[in-house]
Amino acid sequence: MANIFQSVGKGWKRLWEKNKRGKLFAVAMVGTIVSLLSLWELMVMFETEPLKDYPIPLVEQLNEWAWLTLIIGGIIAIGGWLYYHDHNKNYKRFHELMDTDSKAQFVRNIDEIEELALDLGPDFERQVMEKRKEFRVKTR
Image (cartoon, rainbow, N blue to C red; front, side, top):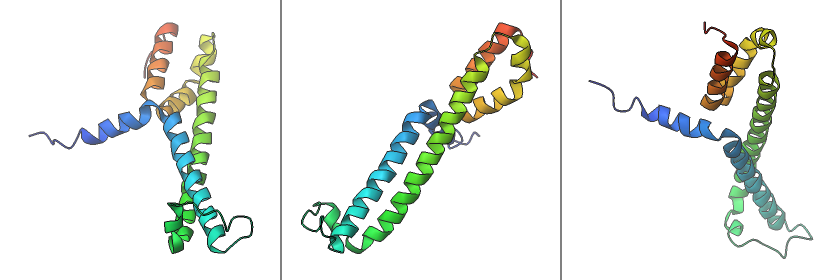
């Protein structure tokens, strides 16, 4: 009997892989916004001069939790931005390697191209397969 939960993880993975750049950007922005709102609340709480008269209504409820949300938001923001930068770097490198008209150069870089395609997602793996067919390079 097949495990009904076996395909559930694959669906979430496909959903995440589909538009990873946009989702990473959204995660980084959420972390940044949470950090900034927590920082604002801490500045209001400690009666920092320019901000003490401008509390934000919903953020005002954080009180002592502002420190925790600042730390969590900071971790999410830093991690999100680093991962977003790494993804963009891999994306750029992948397209640099794929924009070749030389079969020899493609074959020379095939290991790096396949590794980048695995990191970037299934759409990029399809592009590698199409390029292999175009150059008639056999799959290992």
